[in-house]
Image (tube, rainbow, N blue to C red; front, top):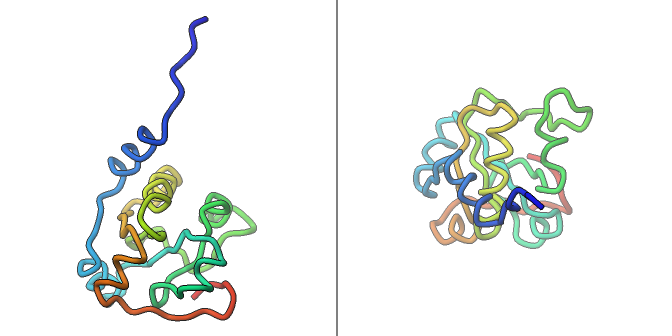
Length: 136
């Protein structure tokens, strides 16, 4: 049988990195302070509740990403602005890389991979606690 080779996680990660550049915490702080970027946390609600999130970040769990970032969807997260730079992060960077490709595929022009929340905290990035889950 002629079967197309299955796409691997490695392929998907490479596509994510090709679609969106990585950004350092310092670069992200500058963009967020200027008001030209939006941070999007794609971790699960329980992770966000346990550790907090980048101050002002939108919480959009990766499992709900497509419905939450499509302006035509009834589940769209109000405030996500496709004209702003989207900074995607998770705990260590893997889910953020996959989510960045989805943002690009769905029409967000400027998407960057902030990577991991752990690196943000290590770089002294501002963190806010959330009571349960929720958006900024």
